[in-house]
Structures are given as C-alpha cells and as structure tokens.
Length: 207
Image 1 (cartoon, one colour):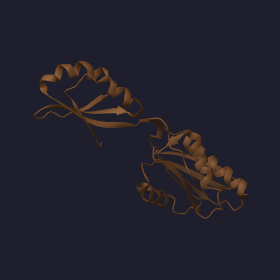
Image 2 (tube, one colour; image 1 turned 120 degrees about the horizontal axis):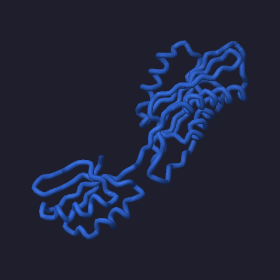
Image 3 (cartoon, one colour; image 1 turned 90 degrees about the horizontal axis):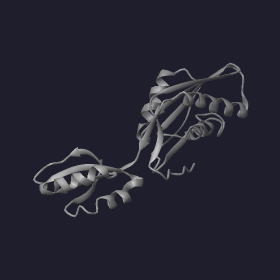
C-alpha cells in the first residue's frame, strides 16, 4: 500500500500505549496501540503482545511511521485477505496519527462472523484503542552549527534570538558557536533573517 508523505513539518504521533475492546457473537477483539518509531521495532513489539496474549487465535496488525519517508505495513495473520490488517490500517489513517502500531488479538467465540463482520470488528477494535489514545505534536527540523568570532557576539545576539532559529546547545571553542535548529517550513525565511551577520559560518549537522 502506497502512503503519501506529509507535506508540512508537523504531525500527530501516539504518545503512549492504549487499548480498546470489541465483542461480537462471542468473539473478543482486543486492540493494543503502541508507539512505533521505525520498522526495526516491529518484531520486538509483536513478540511482547504475543507473549501477553499467547492463547489468542490471531494477532493481526497494521502500522505507519516515518511520515517524511513513509513505512507502512499490514498483516491479516490467517484471517481472510484484507479482513483484518486493512481495516486496522484504515482506522489508523482516520485517526491522522503517525508512528503507531495497532495489534488486534482475536479470541474466537465459536461463531463465524464472515468477511463483513470481521472488517467491522477489526476496525472497531482499532478505533476503540485509538480514540482513547494520548497524542503528541511532533515538529520536523533541520539542524545547524553556527560559528563566529567572539567579537561578533553582540551582533549575533541582537539578531539570532529574534529569528526562526532556535538555540539548543552552546558550542564554544577557540571561536564562539551554537547548535541551532529550525522547522523545515521556516528554513528559507530563517536564512533571510540572518543575512546581515556576514561573519558567521553555518554548517548543517545531523541530530
């Protein structure tokens, strides 16, 4: 499934674990929503859920993370195709959350629900977990190191605190310096705000 990357520099992410429950004709669907930063965490989180619900019939899931380079996956775990993972994923999309994994474990109640019933149940369980979840705002930044002579400190501090650049660490050495960050959408304007500071050197860094 292709997932569009976000166009801005802000998104909502899951803040902490949340659970939901859906019941239908004796079957019980327990949904667990978990923060997921990247695909490398998936197996560990799935193993934890399977260990806790070791006697369940199915452990179906979907996730999406990394909104600038989307990672998406869903799994029906033995249920009919697209009756479990896809509705779970649709619930995630409707919640507008990123960096989230939803696992729905099923305990079979003895009555077959049919594909429409399964779709309703798996989505309903996922929605129950996500509707009660705590969210957090996440902003995307570019990071820089600024260096300049100490004698330029007054000029820099007259301009820098009023720009879109945010100082998050001092980096003083033989010359003066700061580590900065700026939201992606504000980068071009931020550069314009410091054009008069001709003595500075600005280098992009990883953070």
